[in-house]
Image (cartoon, rainbow over all chains, first blue to last red; front, side):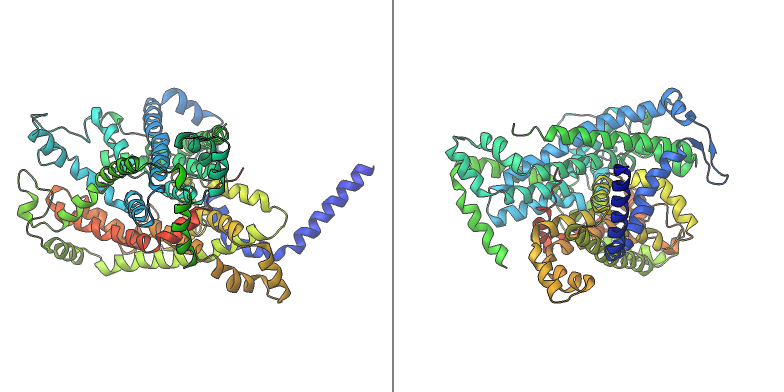
Length: 307
Length: 294
């Protein structure tokens, strides 16, 4: 009885609070409307459609787990896409993350001017839009391609290598290009984080007997920038899975032997070419789950830094 | 101004565990070499953009241009004039999307970030958790369903199809909320309340001037994504396409237009890079607050 009355009381209290806060909700409304409609809703709708057959023209039809069954059991190309995505993500995700962290750390000790120049140079590739198609010219498959010319002149090869159509090289080139572009928002966050570490911590650490730079990095600096490291992890995950567009642009679609086919390519194939929305949504639901779980795992791992 | 003076002083103070002179030199050398490697595609593109045709197809190719010419740029403009839609139309489309999208997103995201940071109300925590999680909802995941939403709203093939989703980008709110958290002390709001300033007036006349680095950063990030947008599948008719799309069509036309393609890449990359160089100290200051606290 008492509990029931109390909970009812809490509920009316909440309602009063909500009513009192109408101004705040109104301020949030313009952003939240677009945010829910185009960021949250699509994820929810993807999950729902993933259990349906839906070709946009006819109403969606519930088919249970069929999409997932086909995807996991009957779709050889999807298996290939998963393997490619994992290979690509393993190199570009952690690779890009560690590269960002290392470079930000090294840059930190220089004076203001040098630091600024280096930050601009390293950050520039990630914001230069379509410039990465220039790599297509550098790794062009004919004898005029820049990489081929250099290797020929050095006497390493006799005939041009088909960098972007030969499955032996495609993935490597794409990983190089995406690492080149990987120093983005996460990198800036690290740069800013290192600059913002409370210098008093270092003095205290020196008294506590920390004697070299690496001890200082592990026990003082990294724990101090842990929030930035968490942010950087999110950025790296999105880059590792999202920048699969690079593979598509450089190697074409469909690529030779599907050697540059990723989950994202597969998703776009079914979503924008074949209009099998249900199947595409099953793919995006899986991708979404993998990213969120991966993030949870990484956040837990980062809590162990400096311990 | 005050900030800029403060930084070198701090750097001097923590000398004791700094790198040794040799260590400093070695890491400088390493960064210099890596930096040059990173710059290579830029150097390559810029030089190609200024090469006359005979230099582009010389064998073996030279990296640096011998007799620079602006032929590629003129040819690019000629090509663009010949296309069914005039060049100025693409520029207009991109400018409209970039300016309206950036303006709208910066205002709405700043307002939302400010309210989420400074006021207590039911659902606040949940909304912010949702925003932080959604940093991972890449457009590839949301894009498929968004196409359906956009077409059912009847804004397919209009600039709004690109602008409205951009208004809901969560990165802006996330950065703004974090920055207000760390930069605006509580008493500021109390004194504003004493002065009788309403919510919107507090936001516009007190908060926004205080968080200038943050909204400059938002502008830069929005320019980076909107200026580069090719409209994806949302813009269909040639009249509505963007500059980035038009230029990528030329780039895609193969080896024979390598010089023109390079000129196109140079034009498209200049805007995001120059705006970043001008504002980089503000951006770095904002990113200091970007951390995700547990």
